[in-house]
Length: 163
Image 1 (cartoon, helix red, strand yellow):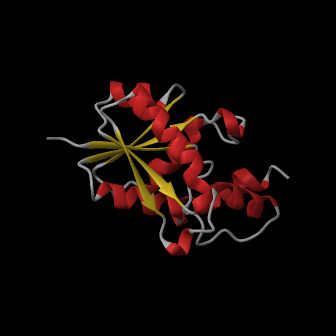
Image 2 (cartoon, helix red, strand yellow):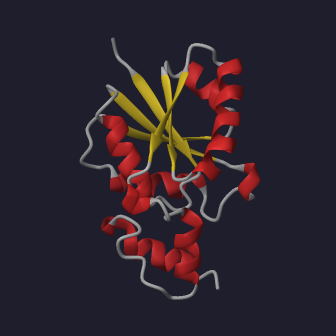
């Protein structure tokens, strides 16, 4: 059986915390799709979804069972169209759980055959979020260790120009 999981998110930008969850998911499933989604609660994001997807592709280049895609509709529709058996979501803190749990229940109602798997972030990334990276960039701080080295310069260039 080919077990396909999806790791959805806005990834604006992708961080080392995201990559940690993706790597761990890739060891549990036959295929992992990193799905860049348009998040209406975050005003659509700073970078276009296509650009975010390309940055992630560069980060997962050495992971043979990881693919990257983007989608603007309901996650439940995407998982049904792509034969996905699980949605993998990373949790940094208890504060993440309430919203993620609510989303998981809605997805279960819309796609009953798909499970949501919560992965607790590694302790070294508990503080890390895309918004933290964006803010550090905007004020000229060093984001080394926050994002993959392969895209660090691109992230600095894209987000530091927003000030």
